[in-house]
Image (cartoon, rainbow, N blue to C red; front, side, top):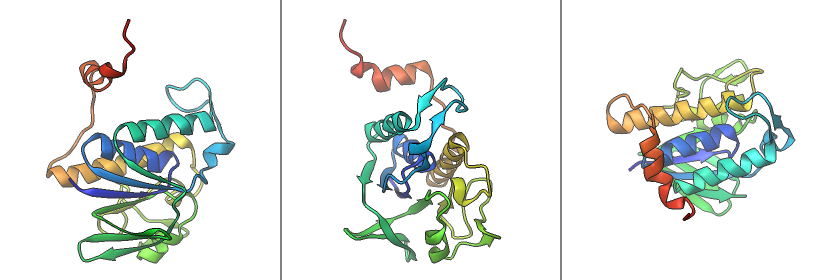
Length: 194
């Protein structure tokens, strides 16, 4: 089981955390709750007719928690560095080692710059899997886009990063596809008794 450190608790970070935790990875999410979602109301998120940004965040956090991610609410990351065998994430509370790093800090690209990621102008340069020029470090959402800062796009970026981590860990292309039977197995025990 790899340790995936996710810096940022908006749609991109929580999506990465959800996919990684749901598929057996150890995940730590550092969430300062400074997401733009608190100013949003979603009408343009596929599958959601209308939801307030705060309600969306509450549901997303609950999903991540339900799959076992360690969400460090309010713990701000003050530094990141590549180490001998992964990454060191620093907060005021301490240091955390991680095999993979997902940066999801909105338009704040300071940590990517500190890590030494390549940039394309003002945005972090990534490939289609959201991997940066620093191996096993990913950047997502507004960090990698000049203007397309929609929640649904950011969530897709986070999912792409996590799926690439899972592909690396499994040694073959990983595809996360669930069926109704999977949902029954995962959530059947949560259903209230009739």
